[in-house]
Amino acid sequence: MQKNRKRILLKIGTNTLTKETRNISRGKIEDIGIQIAALRENYEFIIVTSGAIAAARQFVKLESNGKEITVKQALAAIGQPHLMRIFHESFHDLGLNTSQCLLSYSDFEKAQSKTNIVNTINVLLANDYIPIINENDTVATDEIQFGDNDKLAALTAQLVQADLLVIATNTFGIYTSESMYCGKPETILKVTDLATLAHQLGDAKSSGGTGGMKSKVEAAAIAQRAGIETWIVNGLEDLFLEKAMKGECPFTRIMNIR
Image (cartoon, rainbow, N blue to C red; front, top):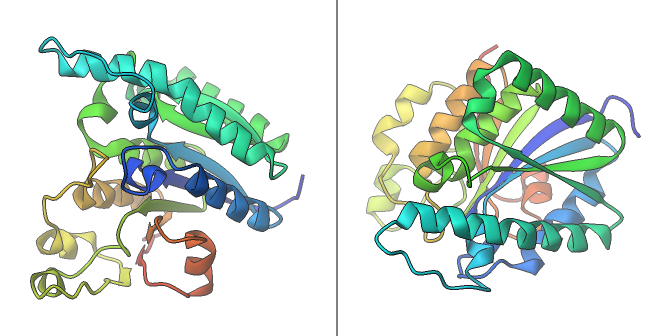
């Protein structure tokens, strides 16, 4: 294990994992693994991922009977092991070890639960295992209904004292509203005062996920208050994190205020 590595919390949305299709992309998961393998000497990674429901829909079709949330919970239960299997197989081929952590928002409200989360994640990282976190959708519906795990990622980053929160989505960060109106998206490269972004945000959600840019800004606000910088990057790009680090693609950088 390398000492003094910076800790990155990488949140991957459904639209990124599926590359905006209906199926989980093994190629995208491999791309994420390739980047982690290349950067592991200087960084340690915690992943918060969506995609369990998308993974299930590749294998089964369930009837809703008017209870859409319960069907989605069932799909999450079916899809979660498939999603983890794909991560394990793709990462193992790159010499990376994976582990699964299922959390719910109630875990962040109890002191003992928070201590247990931190202790478990620290032990996993110390032994060179990458924690892969998703919400426990079979007992909670928050992620299914709102936010696509953006808030979960921010709360986890705050709890484990991450150095950087990276939210991978399907745009090159946050675009100015004027440029979107003109049909020529222009990325807002650096933000300190999140209040100034309010008029820039639309209500659109991604094709596969349940979040939108608003939920990502809300997550960044949680991270910012904890002194953590947030990057909103285009996860559809190959090697998106390495390119962002090298300044080879535009992305939105939300500065910490400490």
